[in-house]
Image 1 (cartoon, rainbow, N blue to C red):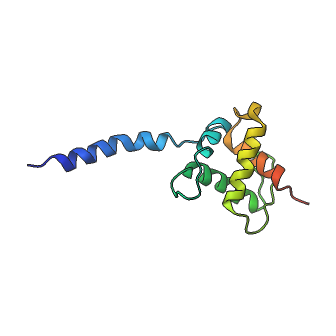
Image 2 (tube, helix red, strand yellow; image 1 turned 120 degrees about the vertical axis):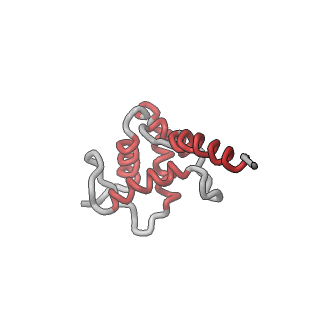
Image 3 (cartoon, rainbow, N blue to C red; image 1 turned 45 degrees about the vertical axis):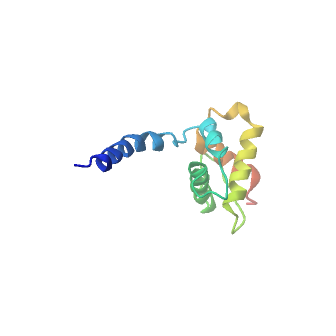
Length: 117
């Protein structure tokens, strides 16, 4: 009887939740850590960063506010530009890294892409 396959499956099943948990974004510090690994040539590197910032940007682009912040990225704004805006903002505001990730993301995008009205 070959037990390698079930053993490998068990190892993966045990390790997967910890790998997913390691990608959790909760505050500015964890967002900055996730965004430090963004490489646009690798589809999985920085996935938590790109997904998180993209989700907040999608909410803001629809005219909604996030913690009182509004942002108006130009139509067709690339995800790379949004991530760069947030990464740069986080680098300029290390004193705010303890705030919620959604707060700092909204603040960064509102500063980079202010709405005219």
